[in-house]
Image 1 (cartoon, rainbow, N blue to C red):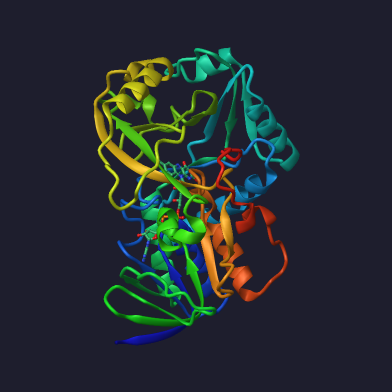
Image 2 (image 1 turned 90 degrees about the horizontal axis):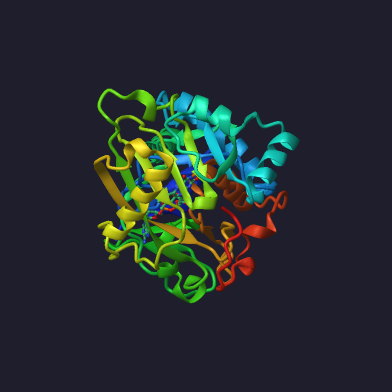
Length: 384
Ligand SMILES: Cc1cc2nc3c(=O)[nH]c(=O)nc-3n(C[C@H](O)[C@H](O)[C@H](O)COP(=O)(O)OP(=O)(O)OC[C@H]3O[C@@H](n4cnc5c(N)ncnc54)[C@H](O)[C@@H]3O)c2cc1C
C-alpha cells in the first residue's frame, strides 16, 4: 500500500473543495485534493456549463457580502488563469407587485453601495422587448452580476491550485472507519493518505459518507435544466441584448445564450429526492412542458424553440439553505463542507477562505449559521 503525508487532505473537487484546496495552499499548507470522478464532473452539482453570480439576497447581508467578495476573487482568478470564467451580463430581477424580496434586495444594494438600476415596466419594455411582462410590476438590473462558466471555472481553480503545489488525483475515498481521531484515509484502490486535517467537500454525496450524521440534514433534490436554441442570426437572446434574469416569484430563472450553449431556463423549486450515483438523469416530459409554459410568458419568441441540451442536476439542501461548514462532532480534525442548497457555486472563493481560516485555528469571523447544530431535518427554505 502506497502512503503519502500532507497537512490537509481535501476530498471532493467541486467548487467548494477546489477553492478550499487552493486557499489552503496559499496559507502554506501541504495539500492533496482528491475527486472520485474529476473536477467539475457532470454528476457533481458544480458540473454544468454555467452558474449565476448575483449579490442580491434580499436583506441577508451575510450572503450578499460573501458574493461580493467572491465576485472579486473570481475575477482575480480569471485574470490569473488568463481565461474568461466570468461573463458580466448583468442580472435582471423581475419583481412582482406583492413580492418583498426584490424590495429588500434593493435596500441592501443601496446600503452596501452595490450598483443597480431600477426600471419601470415601460423602461423594461423598451430595453428588453423580447421579455414578456405578464405580472411584472418593476425590475432592477444588478449591473455587475453575471455568469460563471461553472465546469471550466472549477477546472481552472484546480489547475491554479496544482500550479501552487497542491497534489491532485482522481480516486474514490472509501468509507471512514470510526475512530476518535482520524490520521489517514484510504482510497478504493488502496492508496493510504495521511494528513493532519481532512476536509470532506463531497456535495450531495456527504450524506452517503456520513449517513448517521447527515442523512436528513442534507437532502439532495432532482433539478431539471433546459437549453433552448435561439432563432438563427437573432442576437436578442445573447448578452448584452438579454441579461441573466431572476424571477423568484415564478420560481424560475434564465441565462442568455452563452458561448453557443443556448438560452438556459430552469425552475428553481425543489424537486423530488435524488441519488447522485443512480438517479435518473433523463429530463421528464412534464418538466419540459412546465418550462415551455414559462417561456411562452417570459420569452414568447422561444416558446417552441428546440431543446439543444437538457440536464438533471441535484441541489444538496440544508434545512433552510444555509451552508454547512463545521467540524465533525466526533473527529476534531475532520471538516464537513457543503450544503450549497442551489445557490452555493458563486460563494466558492469565500467558502475556501473560511475553511482555510478554521483549519489555521482562527476564531475570528466564525459564522454560527454554518454550524452543524443549526441543520435541522425539517425543511423550511429561507435562503435563495
Ligand atoms: C441546476 C442547478 C443550478 C444551480 N444554479 C446555481 C447558480 O445559478 N448560482 C449558484 O451560485 N449556485 C447554483 N447552484 C448550486 C451550486 O452549483 C452548488 O451549490 C455547488 O456546485 C456545490 O458544490 P460542491 O463542491 O459542494 O459539490 P459538488 O460540485 O457536487 O462536488 C462534490 C465532489 O465530491 C466528489 N466526491 C463525492 N464523493 C467522493 C468520494 N467518496 N471520494 C472522492 N470524491 C468524492 C464528487 O465527484 C464531486 O466532484 C445550482 C445547482 C444546481 C444543481
